[in-house]
Length: 338
Image (cartoon, rainbow, N blue to C red; front, side, top):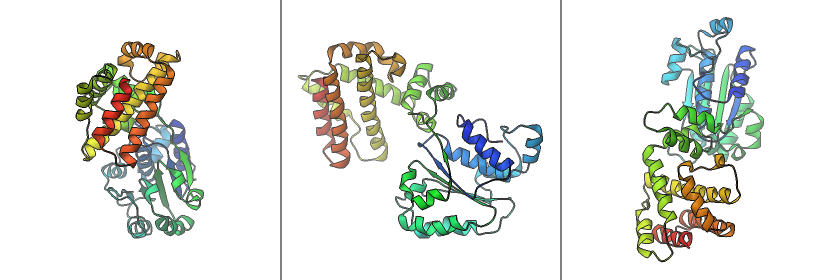
């Protein structure tokens, strides 16, 4: 009965459905995998399944993937089920001992109100401090009866080995590009070509793909086209492009700046693949193939590798050395133009 609207991860869904069906539910799970691929959604669906009022009916009908409309499932969906808590610590870099005790442990040791299981889902568990993790160990070692803890992380190695060893690990991989493309085609605000580009830029994350829109896709295209026509002696064009980059420190510009570095890197990767006569299906910027092939003919592999290195160094200078952003981009664009 895990919702079939959540794309992919069929194997992981079967493991969880079998655990509930055969009454072998673990006290603690660790869902690990890249961001934006559906780990949180599946954790919530599992919480619904554990406390569902209609699951006996679904077992007899065999409709494991049907979306349930019982009162319990609706409450989980709305985030108001008294026995299911999704713990999120937004804006907190490090989750402290007190937060773990108040948000997780106190909840687990309360008697269930209406569900069979007390379920606590901890998002971004890797942000727990060492002290918080050590304090949490006792709960994992001696969990209350009928309690289920689901830790969600994109970086399981940041958790203590003793935490990982006490959880049943369920690994989630990146989604296939084709699945993301099919999902994006349902959007009214993207053309088929834009949906395909978004799926290629998603890195296997539907959440990331859904954050991209036609404006971002068009900005990427204009940025790359501008870079294609830069000349080392076109100082005004280089200065103008550097000034047009998102240079402020606000979150929106910071995110867009990260995208700029990624878009430039992926375009240079496309040029490398073209030079190596690779299959065009592997290219990211499928709407710029012909123009990229023309550029690839003019540049040799060493030249492209040098430009890729310059992109990485510029990113490092800005984010680790606090270098002047505009000057850094001016230098980068001069090197790309050469």
